[in-house]
Image (cartoon, rainbow, N blue to C red):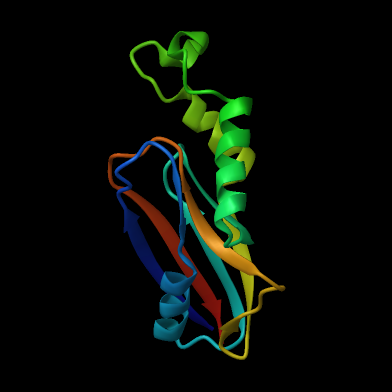
Length: 138
């Protein structure tokens, strides 16, 4: 069985955002040489997320608005975690959107359903964060 590991780094200039990382994961898959197996993609920071959904700007806008309603950034005083910090909302947003995805690899390709893409979600940006790509298989 083959095993491959790579870290992808992101530094979004804004507090929140979504980045389609499917092309980077596909590059990792090609580098791995795995034709049949699984790829794990996970955010290595507690205020960031990895998830699968549609690459449609209206949907991303809706995610951002919905998450901000569920866990608004301000007032920061509403969160006990924010004593000395201001990112409690980022922790909550990450819990909602998830830490990781696992995708099957079939015939050397990501085995997606219609419209599926992999996204990095940032909820406390303006600093470097990493995503782990781990691929195993034959």
